Image 1 (cartoon, rainbow, N blue to C red):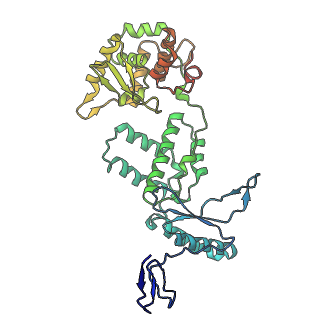
Image 2: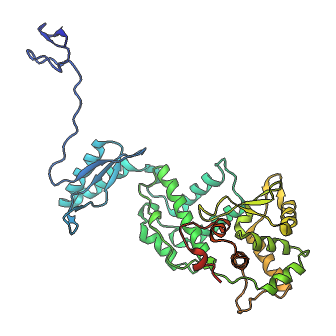
Image 3: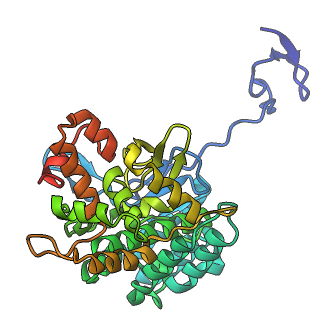
Length: 382
């Protein structure tokens, strides 16, 4: 410890002293203490991670679990500083006792949490901002199919177009999904749109909470259902393999890739394999070797669709050609009477793996399924 002279009274004092014990002269900047909330007001928590609004204000606990643990109520808002959160809680509690103060709380919360120019933005207006940011301002290049899918998903959310975005809750988003009569794939596009819009809103201080993560699709995935092509149907396809688009159908059958995966599939000519996949982590970027009998189809596919700008295969356009080919070969319907779909090619691949005794591990890897699941038997078993 070192002794120094007080600048005010010249007494000897410690250099670690915060103030002079003789005259009280302040020697160091004392840390400013946060104001303590009055009892029964609520609580303020500092949130982890990198956030623009790192202080959350919670109302007083009123509910408890069966074991006596307090159940935290939803936050009334998120704020840049502790002081802003403190003021919001004081106004919130005042509003409970004096309803007229509620407007003051709303104004305070809005000004502290959200960008003021977006307070009244509608779902449709936010979509325009999100769409322009993603497809026009992004360095990443998106296919025409991606833009088409985004617009189609937005169109299917018509009930939300004129609604104020900040007024929407999970129930509003879920109602769109539950009342939409379209297939599972279309519902997936709507959920993807919700997630993208909320991510954009959070990044730009337009919203403080992501309700999209609570939305679920409550119908079976109809795209996973299907019936494999029969042995006679396969023989017919091989017999007419030189006809336009038959080679692509055979590629789909003997690689197991979904039709949408062919939009971004990669072809290694030296190693003679396809690499790609969609939908799940296990499915993406998987490698499937090409049998010598279909390597010619792979080369023809890339010669036809590969340009300097990338692969220009559009799955939604090819679906029409797929059905035209099957109709011309009298293969539109399966032996059980169901109409064949592009996904039946994947079911045929699964059936061929079983027919030729491919081991379970290899089949999992080739089809891009998680090793922990049994989806081959539950969905693709025939």
